[in-house]
Structures are given as structure tokens and as C-alpha cells.
Length: 222
Image 1 (spheres, rainbow, N blue to C red):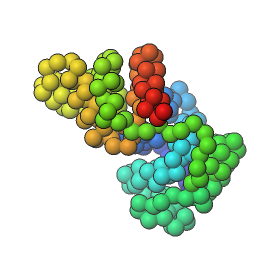
Image 2: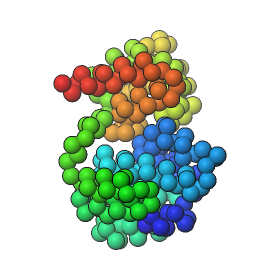
Image 3: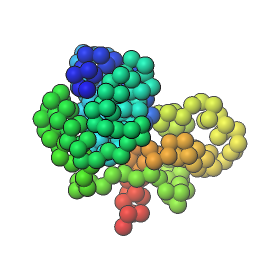
Image 4: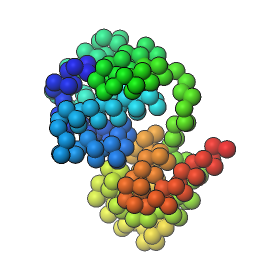
């Protein structure tokens, strides 16, 4: 599978889909789309980022295959991967898949990444806990300290029509921010995480707001 991607993949074809599926952080998305890098370097960064996402949640391997399915020239790669690993369209990815992916990614992007993914995917990960979906109970707290919500929304993949709709239906800025969060969570589901929102805020230079959101997540876990 990795050999096929190495020879056929164009990061421009799938990087936006991977970002929308939360398999790439904003920083990783920018690195993969850096035109100053060679195509080989961009593919390396893309596969490394996907490998890390799979390490966090083994189901992300299924998501990655579904992204490949969206582009006709990559469907055969996804199909062969499913056939080889015995997966259905919506597979439950377990330890054997994690080992296989880890070995393949390790061959391409470095032994340490492959070993880590192969050992950990499909088992309980003892590293830092995965960032969860933003809870409804936290929306008001996050919205109260959310600068540049329109820019944040755009960087999270929300279209201008949705942004305009939020502004037209909510006069108060505080209500606009809450409405944006609710719509984003509704549209992106489990991908609407505290971490993803924090990453976008960091990218926009809002380090303080990003840190406060992560603290809200930590507090709700305790």
C-alpha cells in the first residue's frame, strides 16, 4: 500500500479531505502543502501525520481508506488494502491492522514511527489521552473567550454561507460564537475536538485562548 502511495499519490488531491476528517492538524496541513518541498518530502510528511493519527485512534485507518475512496485514482489502493486486511467498508480496526500499518509506515517514514504505530494501534494507548469531542456543557465557556470566530470557522472548514447564516440569525456576538460552535460540532461530530479548536487558535496566534480551551478539557476530565 505504501509503495503504491509513494509512486501515485499527489498530496494536493487528498490533503484537504484529510484535514476535514481531522487526520491532519492545521500545522501538518500547511507542511504537507508547502510547495517549497519536493513531492517525496510532502508525501513523507503526509504519511507520518496519518500514522500518528492512527496511533491515537485505530479507527482513523478506516477513515484514511475512506478518504482515498473519494478520489477515483486512489480507490484501487484502498480496495487492495481492505482485501489484504480483510476489512469491510466500515471496518473495526484491531491490533493486526495496527501492526500492518505500523510496519508499512515505518518502512516509508522511519522505523520509530512504524514501531510506535504498529505496537500501539488497536490496543489501549497509555500515552496522553485522546482529545474528545467538545461537550455541550462547555460551549458557553468556550464561546465566551473565542476571538476571531469567523476566521476560526473558516479554518475549521466551515463555508462562508454558514458563517453568513450565523451572523444573520444572531445579532449578539456572544450568541454568534455559541451558534458557530454548535453548528461546527453538529457538522463535524467526533472530529470537533478541544485539541483541533486549540490548534487552529494557535495557528492564528491566539495562544492564550488555545491554552484556556485545553484547560477546560482537562477540568472536565477530572
